Image 1 (tube, rainbow, N blue to C red):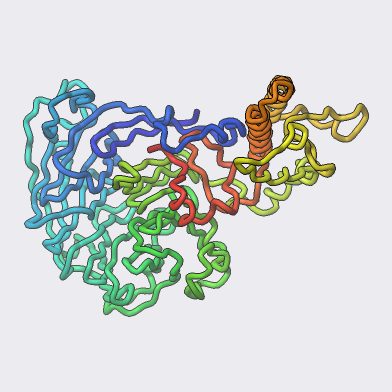
Image 2: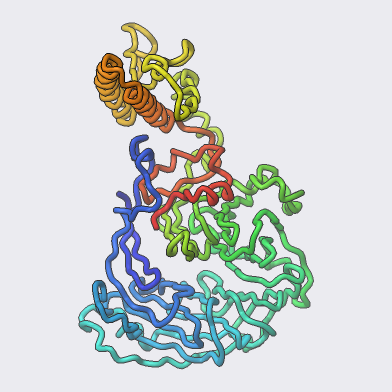
Length: 534
């Protein structure tokens, strides 16, 4: 395992172990069930939140302190160390937050930003205001270990500043990384506003109609490229702005415009480790990763048409995670493990059950330099070129009559999946290093399958002698199923060109990438198969 991450979701404090790259075998992938609870995500503490948790963010200076948004004017601050564990508590009464942040005059449901340089909180709501608080006066009591358990008393913290400039519900707000005075916010009035609290409570820069008439849902400010700001809208568009090229009177154009998402963009976040790399997610159930360095010319033309859904015509779109079965309402990059994500979706229905949390990693063959990737693949040239695809299984009807030999025989051009042929002495294959553990598991599976086939063949002969054709047909079909399952395991160990991701919370390794048939999110949702931990 690599480093772990603590997070809280819907009242549950969890400990998630992040799996190292390339550790799972084909057998692990075969047995993966997205509907099972995952052993790598362990519930650590339960807190009954007063109302639905719409958004949660941790205080960078004190990671054990988190702030939550719900459908109310107030925000709640929690010390996850001091709060009592309510796991198994039959009394479902809401837990008492350590601190209540007051200042909004109407519901503040989603807009929530944390300052990276000071313990400051920014929030937006239906009152059209952006409200700021400082936790400095209370953060000691919230985070000190020797204070004991929480005494159940709720303190209230008044706001420090209220910024006014929007004319509709504020959907998102973000501090400029490293700054305690500069912010950006977006709202349902279609505007992107920039603020500097040193200049007062009015915006210093306004971009009206930033996405046309569409409501703006998300905004994020790059820490590695501080001139870049990303916004997402209800129409599915994603834009990147260079703040240096925006005029105070609202003049200026987006540096990049992407129309790839087929639903509203609900979340956007810049990579904490790779300059110019951005991720976005939304109602189309996808998390897309963009690399602005993939183009030499500043400014990308909009996608020609939504029929090119795979995004191959967009050079900046380097990856798309299609593992969720419902809208992706939030995600975060792992700051300690590059190209690793935690994402959540709103799978709330009679068919899908509750929300889903997934932990996954982008295949490193996607974002590494092309020369490095080709050099690594060159080491496995013989193995890759000698792989022969297993034949597709033939459908077996209810009344079909097939002998055991017909069910298990492989075509002359294919190697039976249940057998492993050792290399001849002196051959090129004999000089190769020892086979990885996944292949060893397949060899073991082949031996077990051979023994099972022998037993089933004897059963078939006995059934034939006793004139029981029904038993004979059932044994033949069972034997065919064993061979096909083993064949699937053999094919699962083959690395295919990267297209979509798999959730690694299973754990599923990042180098076992979805085949092209699973890259379409709609088909995956229809089959109700989505890799992840629910």
